[in-house]
Every structure is written in C-alpha cells, then in structure tokens.
Length: 119
Length: 107
Image 1 (cartoon, rainbow over the protein chains, first blue to last red):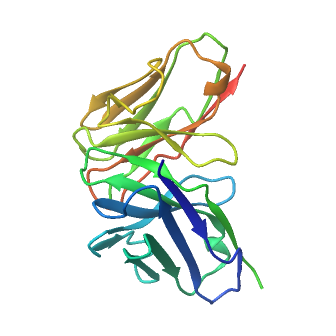
Image 2 (cartoon, helix red, strand yellow; image 1 turned 60 degrees about the vertical axis):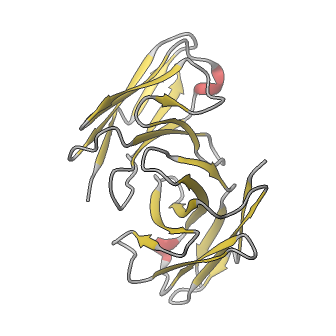
Image 3 (tube, chains in turn green, red; image 1 turned 180 degrees about the horizontal axis):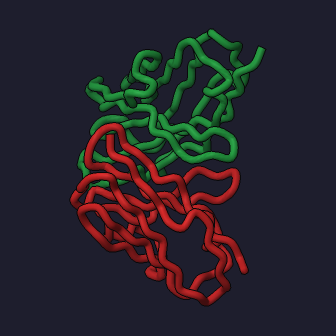
C-alpha cells in the first residue's frame, strides 16, 4: 500500500525558506510525477509544481522564482523549498503522486502538513 | 494559464438527491479533467479522471462527463458521506489549475 508522508518545520519566519520532504513508502518513486500542492486555511487548492523521478521539473509561474523541487530516488523522497516566505505562504502543504500520463489525476496524497509563516 | 470556474460554489441537498456540479475551462482542455472530493481536515481524494473515468474504489453513484470547456460531476442518490467539498482540476497544460471548489451541504 503506497503511502506519502510530509515532514518539515511547522513554523517558518518571514523572509526565510520553507523546506518540506515527502517520503514515499510501499512503491518506488520511479515512473511517476510527484507534486506539491498547498491550501491556505479556508481556501482552495494551488498546484505548486512537480518533479519527475528523472529530475525534470515544472513550476507554477506564480511561485516559480521562489520554488525548487528536488528528488532523491535512493531515499524514495522528494523535497520542496520555497524561499522568501510571507504570511501568504501559510497553508497546508500536500505532496501527491500522478501517473505518467496526462489523463490521470493525483491518485495518492499525503495527509498534509500545516506550515505557518510568522515571526 | 487556463482558469477553471465551478458552479455553484455552495449546494444544499438531502440524502437521496441527485446533484450536478459544473466546471468550465477558460479554453479547451479536451478531456484532461479530474474531480476530487475533500472532507474537512483531510487530503483530497481522486474521484474521476479523464473527465469520465471512475477511479478504482469510487462508488458508481459518482459520474463525470464533458469535454472541451464544459464538464459536469453528477452525484446520484446522495449518501451522508458525500457531503464534502468538490474540486475540478485541469491536466491539459501547466500550471495544473483547480477550480475554486463546490461545498455540498446537507439541507
């Protein structure tokens, strides 16, 4: 049974860098697209970006200048870095899996981790 | 970027009812559309992909249709566990946008 688990600090200071890791268990990270999605409190979902297991990436233009996603296939993990955070980056951050085809949606999700940006 | 607009934003219905949620795309996306259900405090759950294909394990009372710019999610014979927020998402091009959500409440 595939499971995704986000981990990282729950509190980040303004102007600093948010860093989260998603650990995948029960299946190999190879062959899939891995995304980060966030949801501010009481609001909708925003796709942040993806990384393919090979290392290719695509980011949401609204965040592109501040986002980096990387993958470590040896650890079956992928990570998110979001720099220069502000209160607007306060959200639940989810990691999610997508099959290697445009037809498929995100079929596996982590439980989500709340990140608050505050001094 | 492609924008998705869901309607209605709020929907009130009773157990046993049939309801329809619409998702309109700002440009054609073929059938590259997914629907999700989200309950409070939980991650979204994939219900439908490719506009009309039911994800494994999802009850058949959920159905999706549409292509191009207009899509619908229909819930038949509503059950108590179906009251949640529903999102559409386009997978035609980056960035993968979501609709703003439709909250389905018990009447």
